[in-house]
Length: 207
Length: 253
Image 1: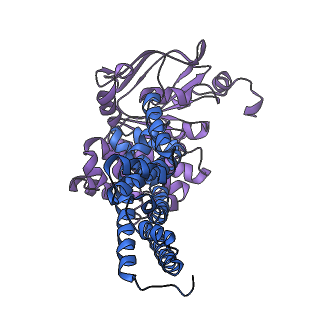
Image 2: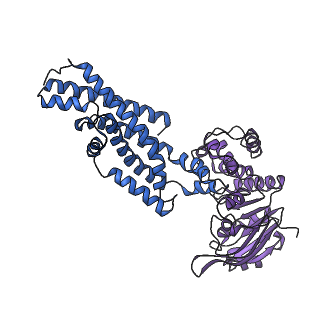
Image 3: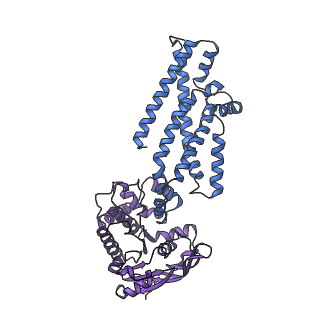
């Protein structure tokens, strides 16, 4: 196993790049979808039938481990990074949506009442009364999920959904443990990098 | 009385069936001046104020404002009516994480599209008015400060600026000084009275401080058990009348 074998560094780099692409795209679309879904799921803002539908969607998204969702997408749309992205979008919507909905349910209704009394439209109440109260937490959940997505994106490759997981799995099967070691070290480096990035983002937004 | 700014007719409210907080209450508010509502805790003061802009749903009765019955309005019509009624709250109800300026501009949300509001693209005349109002309430220079960094008195000044920013035809105030110290209370009441008079807006204010009500109101309405038991100018509010509103006399001495 030691020393790590970086002979195939170009393949490792390519796999890592694809994993990162999966993580970034999945986080982007996941966050974009989770924002409205989380708002719809908040019981203090929405009528019961809306919040329960949104909650059902979130529960379904959280029902399976990302790897199982990845297998489903690989079977549905074929091997490759797209399946990985879709699987992690589902995971992101489930996680951010749930925590965001809970954050919205904890907001101060007094502040909301102040905005509502001005005759603001529903969208105006969301923009000035709700989001200012929950945006820092939403950014916190999102950066945490980005962190998770980077880790998970290295794994969905094992089931053929793109990224560094595939070469890692192959190296295991060939008993090339020095290559395995090199890939694992590279993954650790990337995950560490992702953590630094999310810490920076959180500091910028004061989350 | 000239055409009333607000006419409440036979208003009733029960939070639970049969338990009335307001009973068949009728009240007209003149187009000028400060009307103070006093009464013991639980007498329905707050409910009455909140029924007017429908933060609380009335059970029965009519509330006439600008020729319409507020109790019948829905959706966009209700929001348009709310935009014409400013409200000042006991605990200020500012959005804590927004700046003073953003809180004052909240008073214009009813007139700005959500996208423009989100992008903070308010019309320049609104922004100018907000600066002028902040100057009038004594907070110029605080525009960029966040609401949660202000003291209670300063927050209430922002609350008043937000309400006046709506260019309302009626100003409601629900115990606006109950969270403030005595000196600040007087300052806030002075500001509220003078600003409303300057903009020709009638004020309907709930108070539990009788002395403050006597000092600032043109008319005092005493509420007990959800009904009006006194209605007259401050000098007519004798100790005997007060005992009638609050019950008992020992607390007066």
